[in-house]
Every structure is written in structure tokens, then in C-alpha cells.
Length: 354
Ligand code: CP3
Image 1 (cartoon, rainbow, N blue to C red):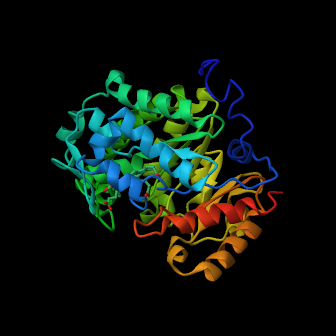
Image 2 (cartoon, helix red, strand yellow):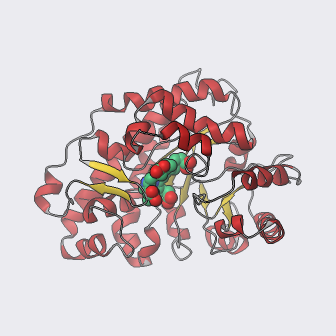
């Protein structure tokens, strides 16, 4: 067996948590809810703890990463923790020069945009992930029956940052490279997939009960390009993790046209962004697929009545899926009043889950 007997899924701690059941396609008395980017800048206790420590440095300090992961669980009583880390952590742990620049995002020392640079990418020594394993172990020891979600970035999204060397709006660099030099693109995406699979495996083996693969920027691809240049690499990551036996969630933004292909990459659960109602998503991916989503983050600052109306609509549309995990349609904006998130959790927990 891939997971030890004392792993939270095997010891019985998280096996029947509402989140894990929903990911398996089963309903419970209450609907599970968590928020993408719940650990982070919307919380004053996070900002205080992070003062003076760089983003990626904080991810590699086990006590700090664990404490940040636990903060939103204590405060909001969400049904899952998401591990505090970043999609570029495996890239950094492999020895590539990358930082998170505040209010910008991942920035590399130099863009990985030539065949020579791609060929020279180092392998990821598994020992470099020890701080991750340690942080996860500390976290699950505190979480008890609340499941921890591990995560990584899908090969397209991670490779897009590497080719550009920084965040961009249209991802022209990677989308051009795919066609100009497909061999180099595939080699880079393969590398990104391998280090990401190692990163996710480390989290699950240390105690995470499910995983989410973020293909945040896949929505910039046509279906044809997605199928040729992104999907095979995501499929390889999912296949690599199959023996772990955890439910695998796949999410991206602006991916309405790609949802079926994302499911076919090997996901068990599809995360839907706020643009596509869940009943339409269910028609596209098939009525047997559990869904996660998709409250519009913009409504967090629009006042309770419009927000409540959106939540009600999301819950109603989610009835078309066998299991539904409430979430936002993308990450928590830094300006969110944390009390609004707490109120959403209380409201959702007061609704029938079936
Ligand atoms: O609460 C959580 O969701 C867990 C932690 C988490 C972070 N990043 C922490 C973080 C997760 C799941 C991620 C994933 C991630 N990182 C994605 C996929 C999810 C998505 O939003 O689409 C992407 C694209 C990244 C890359 C990245 N890292 C970006 C675009 C940024 C924002 C840069 C900025 O300042 O606007 C980061 C930094 C980052 N990752 C922060 C956090 C809490 C902010 C750092 C800070 O506190 O200054």
C-alpha cells in the first residue's frame, strides 16, 4: 500500500469527513466548504506572522507553514485545510532561481526559454522536500478529523511562468514555444510535471487526504492546443499519483471550454470557476462527476444580500452533481473582510447537504 496505516485516511480520521465523502460523490447532512487562498493575505494573523519573512522562505519553515495552514481552519471552521505553499516551491527546491515578488507573483532569475536552458534543468532531489513533509506532519497532527488538501500547479501553468520568467496576461511566450519548438515545450512541461508530482506525493505521504492540481492559466489555451500541449502532461501527473488512492481535484480559470478535457486528464473532481454555472458544468463533464465551486469572489465585497443570492444559486445548481464542495470561483482576494468568509461558512453549514 502506498500510504502508511497511520495516514489520516487509513486510520479512519478523515475517511468519512464531509469533504472526502463529497469528493467520492457522496452527500452528507451538511455541505463541505473551503476557500481557495484561504491561507494568506486576507487574514491579519497571517500578515503579522509573515512580517520580515519572504514568501517562499515562509513555505520552507515547517512551523510557520503549518501555523499559516491552520489559521483559517481555526477562524472560519472550514471543512478542509489547504497546505500553505506555492506552485513554484518544487521549482525552487530543484534549485531554479525563483522568488515571489509581492503584488506581482513568481519571478525567475532568468527565463527558461531556450532548448539549452530546458536541457540543463536539474532533477529534484527528494530530500529537498523534507521541510514540506515536516510541515504537513505538524499540520495533520493538529487537524485531527479535518482533512488537509495537498496541491501543485499543472505542468502548463508552471511551465508558463518558467518560459516568461514572470507573470503575464496572455501567456504568449509558452503558447508560441509550443508551435515554434514543440520538442522543447514538451521537455519543459514534462520536467514541470515530474517535479510537481514529487511535490504532491510528498504532501500526501506525509498526511494530506486529497489533492488539487491548479491549472490556473489553462483558460488561455484553445481546446486543440490544450489537448496537444497541456493535457498529456497533466494526465501524466494524475497517473503518477494514482497509486496513492486519494481523490484528485482539477481546477483552472476560464476553462469552460476545456472542462471535459480536464476531466479526461484523470481528475476525479472538477473545480469550476465563477463564469460557468454548476448545472452547465455538470452537463459538460457528466453527471457522475463531483464538483467544487463556484461563488464569485467579487461578491465578497458586494454586501450580504447579493452574496447570499449567489450562494443559494450555487447550492441549487450543485444539486446536479453527486457530491458538491462549496468554494469560490477563484482565490480569496486580499481585500476580503475575513468575517464575511466566516459568515459564509456558518450559512452553508445551516443548509441541508442532500
Ligand atoms: O490558501 C491557499 O490557497 C494555500 C496557499 C496557496 C498559495 N499559492 C499561497 C500564496 C496556493 C494553493 C497557491 C497556488 C498558486 N500560486 C497558484 C494557483 C492558484 C491560483 O490562484 O490560481 C498560482 C497561480 C500561484 C502563483 C502565485 N503565487 C501568484 C500568482 C501569487 C500572487 C502574487 C501577489 O502578490 O499578488 C503568489 C504568491 C502567494 N502564494 C501568496 C500566497 C498566500 C501571496 C504572498 C504574500 O503574502 O505576499
